[in-house]
Image 1 (cartoon, rainbow, N blue to C red):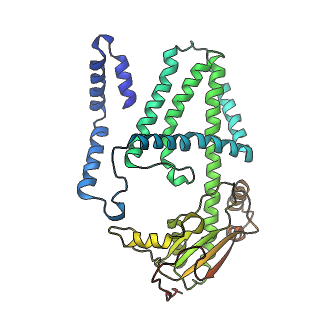
Image 2 (image 1 turned 60 degrees about the horizontal axis):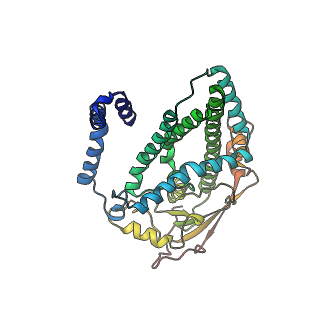
Length: 375
């Protein structure tokens, strides 16, 4: 809708004046996309009337007018997470695993040779500045819903950065501005290949590298679930995961509450388990979860942080390897039948369980010590 507004505004005659042109462009957008105007209002009204947030969720997604300090902090977080951290991660990934980036460079080179962009007239100063201006406007517009809701992205966990996908549009406009600027010194074809080629190589390389990272993370999760399923459940319902795959400065994302608890339920059935990663939580995690569990409207009623405790140690096994190697071996095992998948996962991790109080975690007052296993 913003693109339509700009197109109509620029296409209107200068004789209409600035205010009339803006009004006509806005009216055209409303008539063309009425659902984009009405649906947010319907959504907000529906939530406010029939689905009011209560208890621990009363302040979640709480729309408010952010202060100037909140805006500056939020924009800084989006710039760091959406751009600078991505570039820094791309450089590290290209050094550690250059093969995807080399393959992407060959692919881009072939495409550029086939396209053979022709000569174009050098863009004017305003044509070079317009994409940068639109990129800034889009960045502010796309980040504003999150800042109004009090949400900030995080580079440390992919679940908290998923909404950064939309920030590719400001990046594309910025690349277009750089391409038009580069045409002042080199030919249009060279500028196209240099600017958009590098952007495409970065996108393909990062896409593959991130996929490999998530696939390797899933394999470790499946290896732990299979191991637990083959054991008799210990006399405990509260489990802390000591993840030995954490190896700084290598990239690492700890398993969350839902993931650890979900693995316990998959392995031992539907019981009031509560599982968490030691490295991801504070020592007061049991008190915090008990408070959240008993709050009005809580979604954690099925958790029981007061049960008997145990610690699960997940350590690299003889089959552990870097992510690239691990994923390659997995697909060779899965599709080329070079090994048995169950045996491959069994060799990936070594799991031990120690029943007793969890070290480094503050005990919950009145915790029950008589929880019995299901089998």
